Amino acid sequence: MPDSEPDSTSNFLSQFSNQEDAGEHFSPSPEGFVRGRTKFVVVVGTVMSGLGKGIFASSLAKLLQDKGLVVAPMKMEGYLNIDSGTLNPYRHGEVFVLEDGLETDMDLGTYERILNQNLSRKNFITAGQIYTEILERERRGGYLGRDVQMIPHVTGAVKMKIRELAMSGPKGQQVDVVFVEVGGTAGDYENSFYIEALRELAFEEGDGSTCFVALTYIIEPAILGEQKSKAAQLGMKRLMEAGIQPHIIACRAKNPVTTKVMQKISMFSNVPSKRVFSLHDRESIYVIPDAMRATGLDREILSILGLHERVDTRAEDSARQSWSSFARRLSAVRDHRITIGISGKYAALRDAYASIEKAIEHCGVELGAQIESRWLDTSDVASAGSTAKLLEGCDAVIVPGGFGMRGVEGKIHCVEYARTHRLPFLGICLGFQMVVIEHARNVLGWKGANSTEFNASTSYPVISELPDQKRIEGIMGGTMRLGSQDVDIAPGSLASFLFGGAAVIRERFRHRYEVDPTFVARLVEGGLIFSGSHPQHPIMQVLELPVATHPYFIGAQFHPELISRPLSPHPMFMGLVAAAIARREPAFAQTAAGLRWVRSNSTASQPITRS
Ligand code: GLN
Image (cartoon, rainbow, N blue to C red; front, side, top):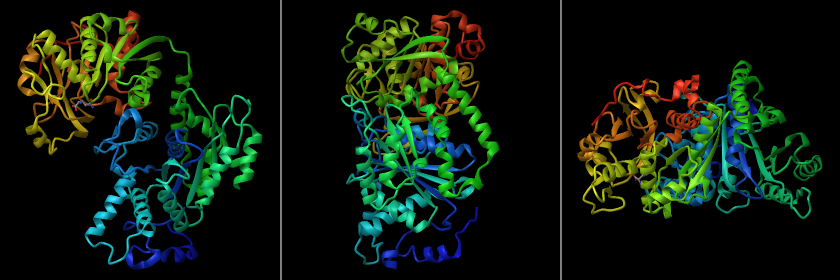
């Protein structure tokens, strides 16, 4: 593939300039950016949101990544928030935290899992970020006396972000394909400047540079019993009114889309039938890449973007094999059956815990277990009796992260139940803190022990906000510890067993409160083991109970679910699922998987303590 475009195109492109006084041809691009080297795939939704645009875009990106191409996804949000940190997860789904600490939309989690690639703030933009940047620049006099306008300045800033991402390949090289997912639906006010920026981008980068994919929805009203294409046609019109001619149309639907409907859509949108695809509901998102490849969608994109020559067929074969074997195991009959209780505040809204569900799914595939997740609303759990009832039939329990008071006492009861009934347990972030509180109250007898998040005047603030440590961390203003950090793992511990003996692991954090170091020694005397901590400071990050007293009891101040990947499930979840299987079927502990993941007294060395 040539690095630069033919002469006529480059003459045409050279009129676009980085200079603000270039008038209407102002279109910034980063230094060294070579037009034509990076291609762009833009995914826009029509008809309605919630069609799984992120899943679709990431699966498509994966198909190209499997071919040896370097891909980089970008999610564009139309809202004015700077990031997703302040969004209510029960309205918007989980807040996904990236390595560099950016709090993003849950779609970024889907991209990371499907592409097995760590993302950064370059991969996520919001209208709030774009406007803030422009307004700050305006105050600095950065626009040379010009009036600052939606076009070219706002759209210019969007194009700049896309091209900056294009420059972020390994060793400073340009990536092959940037995948842009526009949040919302064509026709929304909020995202219209993104759509305009993408139209301009396609024009400036030249023919064959950009492939627009419209994801649409085919309705099938029960009263008619047949699929109707009109809503999809109207949605497509909105896109075309914005100056965008889709190259590919993917039709989401409950059932496979009929040829008749696909022909109609083709006819009304100038897209040849072979580029209109049916994407009906599947049992798991992880079978979508293979299903899409079977339709030939990836090959059409290669043709539209002229990318066939960059394909590495050998890389593709091996990537396909490993994914397909995962997908096969996903659909295979599972040998084991377990139920995991998850204490969630608004138990009905699963999106708020999307990564936990996925982490469990990854382990189920790996260990051949059919896992039912049971969401437990702990807001009414007031006593040991009601906790026992709530947890009846559960083979393991997870107390996940969270903020705020509601359901907290019920979660502490769940911890107590799991501890005293030897029920496999995993506490995540807030769940880790609940373990410390439960231990303080019920093992050490410190009545009213609490986190200062819930009771600022408790006499035993075992979990508290520690301004000194925030300073050590460089986190000012009482904000949160966010993003990836190293965690030292104590040798001989359950954590060390799970992490294959690793002395240091790297995990993602999102919390404000932590174990007050002045209580650590006494907590340890009471039998709690702190087996993971900050490399330099007395900040406790993993805790556990000795394997002699409990088959599996572990907690983490970080969020292991955020880095669990389909082909490399997170060890803390693997341990939990394995312990749950072994609880039902003791013989499992002697299988190869059991020997790797179930820690018995004989595999454990002396319980260690750490302060
Ligand atoms: N609310 C707790 C804190 O801020 C836990 C946060 C979480 O679970 N993500 O420390």
